[in-house]
Image (cartoon, helix red, strand yellow):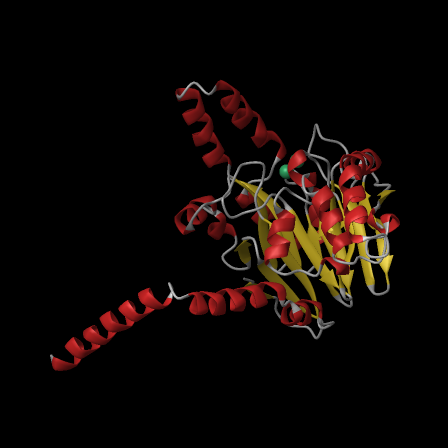
Length: 360
Ligand SMILES: [Zn+2]
Ligand SMILES: [Zn+2]
């Protein structure tokens, strides 16, 4: 009995010392200095993410239009050949990337799946931040028809800001030409067959039409790099073109919306007289894919790993995640991952299984 009492006393004394210490300016300065260094130093992170030994997918936004305290709206960053390629720039996604200490100057391009607001919200921020970080070129932005007007609109909205920054920091440091975006309109066959969207060395990006009617065009992408491959569905109902694109791929990132939960949200909104919300929750099941259907797509394609993202509603905790995935294990008892912001999936170029981890 004696030892625990001593231990308890030691803990109390340590607690008192710590409580006093955090009020000492020298201690505060030391702690703050450590945090500042940690937040700014990204050398280890860059070495980890950009080593040319894997095709990587980083979740920079796992949510959907519905709000979430810890999930940005849709954004997936594919890392290959020393650069990262951002598929959709949902609101909050740059913040997620910045917190993860992503090197903005290494951006290769942006790819849009379609132009719903939850997919484009951070384009201006991403362009500005990667320019400030030292991007050596105008930002290439790829997408189906419509990308030119989205890019022109963001460019106009941020024109004053770009001018302020060059005026403040100098044109040598922030050349206006490098702060621009360049829209590239992709030609996408309507029948779902893939077309080449982009090639750079060993990296090939293909684009294919999906079914997000009445939104047209809407597309998904496949990234192939040195024998590894991943497919991103974009927003779609369960559709054959995703199955075809994902055949032989190592990873399928598929949108997922739990319609049982959406129905409960509809009923609650109706009960509470929030009729506009009730109308929206009534309408959205018609153009998304349920978690069970996403698993069916992955099974039909024979893809070993399924990452569900664009989560509607975004699950706020582990219990909600289990409810979200109800019924999935009956048809697919392995190879299912629910995206969280900061999740990293690595496909080693040497072969072998995907590695799933979470960055902080
Ligand atoms: Zn969406
Ligand atoms: Zn959409």
